[in-house]
Image (cartoon, rainbow, N blue to C red):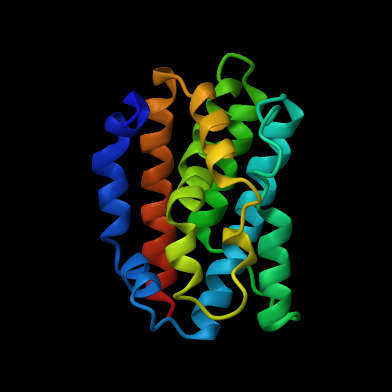
Amino acid sequence: MTILRESTNLKHREVEQTKFVQYLLSGNIVEKDYVSFLFEFRTIYEVIERLNHKYGYLKDLEGIERAQAIHDDLFELNDGYFRPLLPSTIKYLDRLNELSEDASKRHLLFAHVYVRHMGDLYGGKLIARLIPGSGRMYVFDDRPKLIKSFNEKLTIDLADEANLAFDYYISIFDELYANL
């Protein structure tokens, strides 16, 4: 276990215990609820990936991007789905943009890649078997190589921001669940 993972373990467990994540992992999530999840997370991943690419933080992580795969999953299940983003998602996107605008904090954007993309790398195979549709967002070409490359880029100074990211996801998952 990496030092960063140890530093974020409590928040990670807290996210796993949210009602929405429990629903997602139950194998009983219905398509309309999974589509709502994909809709929020497509935008989140687009922003995380765009900003991290802009500052070069995804260098040497070829194949880490998930936004297009999430878009493809959403299109497969409901190609015309649209609604306003949840307020919790908007708050999270505001945080990402705030980090991007502050040169002294930009490097913390990588903490958000850690929280989302590492979760997909580690838990994606399981989740893909439990959700409606093809689950392209959980398919990686060379998972072990990507994990190794990713771990080489992690630093302990990302811990506080990663824990904050988990707090944002708790809010998003709670709001998703409240809207079922």
